[in-house]
Image (cartoon, rainbow, N blue to C red):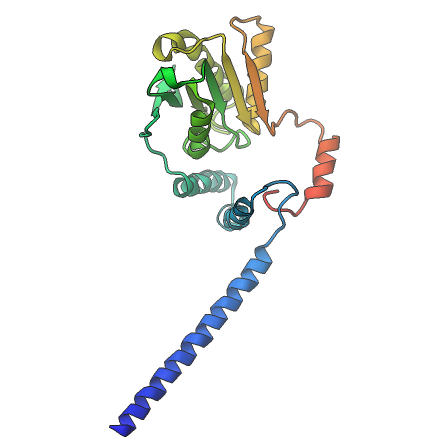
Length: 268
């Protein structure tokens, strides 16, 4: 019994040593990988420690799952497919799409043949404005969809408290040539003008259009085309979030500034 006890104690000690050694190796590998992937955040990008920590986790995950694999694609079709599929899949983990909220009615539908994600209050009396907001997502004109932006648009719909908030799932390049994407956005705008008052109680004179990146470009283009046609009612306002407004001159001050000051930083 004494010999068996000593042997069992020795086996436990060996197992414990193996676990410690294995844990140490894994820990060192994790630290080395974190050091290799680390990139500092741009100044003033996030204020709270929690937001900064989240960005330091999300940004390397995006590079590993989204950016680096796309560089291995043998052709443009593979690259487009991968860069479209990956952020959509990740967005389902971060903010899954669902159609129930205690304060909002939400649905994915088609307006004049264009796919849209619609948010409106369960009770119009609770809104702070009888206007409408139309959101156009970014993605370089080739990727992005309403599902990828669900977490953002749902949050904005709650915070802005308007009669109607709609996100447009316009057709993408290269399958759709310009101005197909712009025409999709204009169709939705006209649909809101014609049906917003009766369906949602939204005033067609109080429509604000907003978009980020390539979506900002589509917002600006739609606004200028509508102004050129002297169409009524006018767009009440446009909100351009880091918009892509021109691609003819890559030596402007802002291009040179971001290249000089932010090259190599996280999310750049």
